[in-house]
Length: 350
Image (cartoon, rainbow, N blue to C red; front, side, top):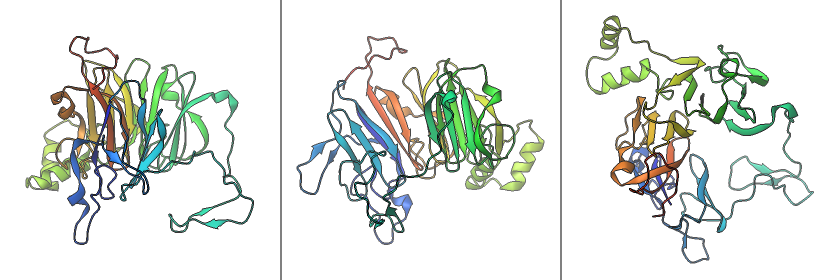
């Protein structure tokens, strides 16, 4: 199993030793096509370590991705993270409390940050929710329960809560529009949310400024016309008068999006303003903001329509998982077995 990455790479989180130098912009570090990150990582005092093994028996997975760093977990080695320094070091579990009782200490890695002797505050959720999954956006949370219901709370300024308005919610509130349809996965972007049903249907809601919902975006179409030199806003207005297309900036209710009519959606993940989905046939589809190449289409163009990333099909690879950072995307893929039915989920090692 191999992991591939594409998108924002100004801090070397996809391709090592690619930090920006003086005079370079973020565009100089963009990775617009998927590249394999099955490479050697180093500790300061250790020999190179292979982070991805070519074996179906090794559960290697990128579980988290930040704008400057990504963390990889394996069942054969401690968790490791890599960033602009191309260093790997064990990750401390998120629930591990500091082992001291003294005053707060300065935290040198994050300006203004600190390590406190007291655990973070928390508010327990109602035990009736039976939460099985939680996705966090910039200002909102999306929770999936064991019964397949979805609850959201936080800021609703961009419709990201899916309750039909832009009001905030201080307590978890059930999404009434989806009640009675069991959901299997949830994901949250900066200001948008997505989920998949038990039957593989994809529902989206929230902000669509960059086409991250896969719905027609007025702002995105206007930018595309300007880049093509077709006259900007006046042309956009003329086109609207001659067509019945409806542009959506904010989708406050869940909307069904047909990624592809031939198969179901099995995995989803959201970046700040882009979305990625894996289908039951092992294809990867991406849409939304693409300025850093995070859509994997070989360009820095954005899209308000789901588009298949052809790289994996061309390489004979089956995508099995996807994890989005704010401005980049990481994908796990395996070699396709031509003897198996396209819809099978049996792993075939590289």
